[in-house]
Structures are given as C-alpha cells and as structure tokens.
Amino acid sequence: MHADVLGEHGDSEVLVWSGAKAGNTPLFTFAEQINKPITQEVRERIDHGVRYAAYSIIEGKGATNYGIGSGLSRIVKAILTNEHAVISLSIVNEEIVGVKDTALSVPRVLGADGIEATLFPSLDEVERSQLQASAVALETAAKEVLSKHLK
Image (tube, rainbow, N blue to C red; front, side, top):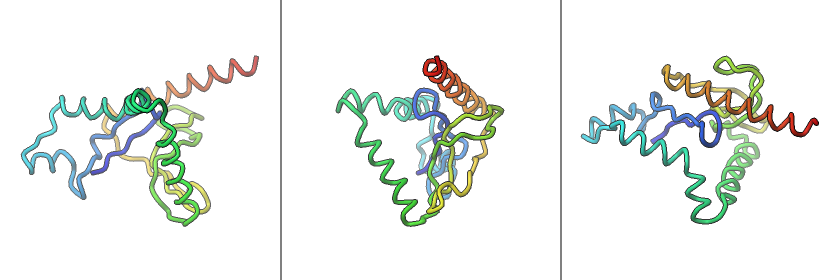
C-alpha cells in the first residue's frame, strides 16, 4: 500500500487519499473488492495515527531519533547509489498551491545529483486546500523564526 504524505511533517501534513493505492489498484477500489470499505471513521483513525505518530513515539521512547536516522539513511543511500528514488522531501519551492518561497514536502526524484525532479501528485479539492493550509503554516513558522533571530 502507498499513499503520499505532503506538506509539513507534523500537525498540518496531508494524506493524499485520492491517490492511495494497494499495488496498482486505487485503495478505495481495493477495499471494496476485499469487502473492507474504508469508512470516514477508518480514514480519521489512520490520518490521526500518521499525523501524530511522532507524539506516540516520543511518549513511548522519549525521542524520535531512530526515525530521523532511518529517514536520513534512506536519503543518503538514494544519493550514493544514484537510485533515482521517489522520496517525499522538503526544499524551498518557487510556488506550490499559491504559496511562494516556502519549503514543504512533496515527492521528488533523488539521485547522485540531488533532487532531479518534483512529482506533484493530483489532488482533490480538499487535499489541495489542506496542502495550502500546511504551506501557510510552514510559511508563518519560518517568518516567526526569522523575525526572532534577525532582531
């Protein structure tokens, strides 16, 4: 199963349900075929679990350092082996969903030369609105950090 998680890594991240797949089959079609429909309750439970996973890890282990290390290891491997892997990564984007010059995570092709391409997924209107809210939250946080350090 695969579903993209976009935007901030945290409270405002966006699960792209409209593009979620089980193998090559859209997730909702797959769920119907196996007679396990994905209800709104199931979506909310999964969304909450993904969005707040870091809090659960911190509560249980005290930190998320192994998760960060694992993610960094994956990025380094893709660069060292020129893998051309598709990984959600954050860089400053010229413009995404109407928000300019903000770093947020979307799928990118990563190889020996760094980020080679951005693969922006198709989003439904709700997901697009959520991603825009995430981008604005990141933009606001970056401006707050800059204003505190430039004083």
